[in-house]
Image 1 (tube, rainbow, N blue to C red):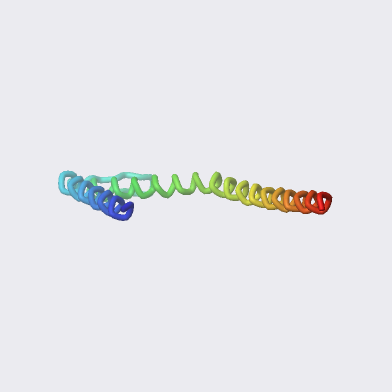
Image 2: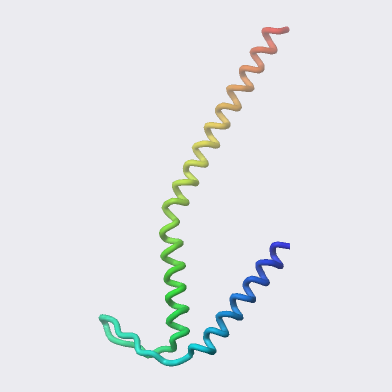
Length: 97
């Protein structure tokens, strides 16, 4: 069910992007320090969106790595606590018997 929802959402976004391109296809001149380039406004918006996504992923990478490291540490700690609990249960069964 979620695949159908994601596919529908992707198609809607693609259609909205295509409609944006059709309405904003005028040529603009982008001046930057090294020179200038002529391109359509819609392509500049796509490039800006892609750059924003890449910067967002780059910014999230450090926190994701930190959280993964914390999850591994907690999993090891949980395994150690489980082994200790199993050991204590075995000792209690020996003493009772």
